Image: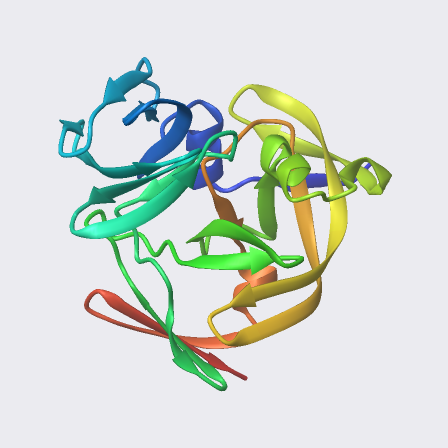
Length: 214
């Protein structure tokens, strides 16, 4: 089995040191939402209340809207955690995508894999697109049919799976048949590695990154 090198960012996520706030809606009780922020214990909030910088805006059935750094995001019970405080939806069109860095300097656009919404993080240190096993299950990737690979992680060698993604969408651009590796550990978002990024000419100016199709 081939050995894959995992980027330092990915190693950090595998031991729980995420760069952005990960928020999940664990439950709803009346007008209150049970939010889990990063690795803290779940906490019930009423609309208008704030916990660790995450403000609950409203509750509607099995969903809730939260706000951080002026950006709103709708969460649903049972869905995977999302990373807030990132760059959100990429702008641009045609052959060009413009990303904006979050307060920590990371580019974390929203996009889609195989038609399912995901939170990305641009990682030029990653060899390939990397997805945590729980997220792969959520978006219905049949990863165990993929080829097993050995991965070097912070906790030693681990078995992952190499798969082909039918489609990967970022902004208005869709790429097909993208290689990805599924890691056995959970990650708060999908890493956009160099096998995807090298399809673009990358230019960074201050807090903006422009990806232009080659």
